[in-house]
Image (cartoon, rainbow, N blue to C red):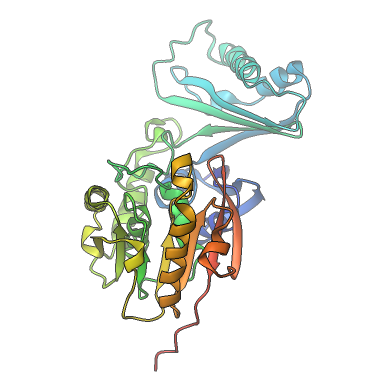
Length: 381
């Protein structure tokens, strides 16, 4: 099969986690940059990457990269890309998104319209037509300019990969599924260790952990834009990827994954989402405040996303809430505790300096992933 290059965007600060996932899938990395990892594969890799990657936001088929400092140059070099190799005559094509950083061309709307014009000019000649009905499958482009280098990709995913299909209901300020999975994968947690989320909200951390433990591929229960690309991806590739995903599931495992929240309605939502994801039998949800966070077993993990006062009236409650978190953490002295928050005074009120601290952008919010590491459990005889 012909080699192609694929681009997987991700959260800023989590490129290493995605890189490891791609290598584990068996693909070769070509480049790691801020917020994205590029790798080599074949058309089947489009199916496998969309279905199996937990931390990528989407998968783009890279079709070109060139330098452009004027709109004329952008037009000509876009026109030079062999669009007919990717887009059939009835294909629907447009520039869905254009981003520009430190480049002379910075107007997204101008970049979008000039590139669309260039594609039309090329395809008119190739397909010997003056008019495209655009009634077939969709081929939306995503373009990013970085220091005048234009990278062009066709989106194979459609709706972002964090939409796994299980989260029918959300509580306020939920964390995305891709970010939750990445934060779990950043820890040494394994399925034989306890995991508790004391601010579980709609259940994203416990559900992603249960899916990791049971080896359930995140993209199994949803569809992708490129399933319609009959000119590029044989249906068999999708069937092969889904069959392999089904073969890998092991949901008869013994795990101890728990989610608590103060709000009874929110716990109902979390249970419904877990059921939708097929992991409700692997998670114990309970209405319980963080002040009652305790566990008889040792060497567990807390992974959580506590409130961080995006609204003014909540800000006043943060010192006392984070003190409560600190008290609970003291009781779990052999546990490892991980929390993501944008609250600047987290360590002050928890009463302890984190062993590690990682800056991560959650959308446009700058957050920190505080890591309070517990002792390693004794080796099993």
